Length: 91
Image (cartoon, rainbow, N blue to C red):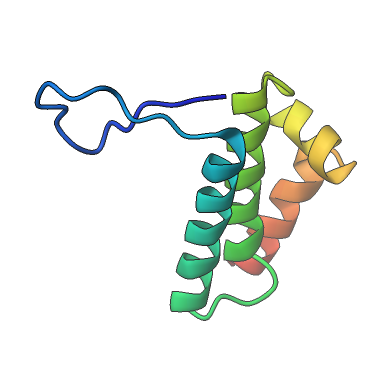
């Protein structure tokens, strides 16, 4: 998998590409940085961001077409169960 860096103007340069592992590592690193910065607990925000990370990875790989697929493949759970974890911790 390669992706184009859309954060900077190309100014006539060749597109920047990243290997799959680089995208996945950066995504997980960013998620952990955010969670650490706000001192997130083990539930709620952490569940929410981890679902987003897992969904992004699954969509990029073509492993899932929607959040229901992500929940089943990444967690072995129904999406409603995961959303309940998030809702319960953010009330």
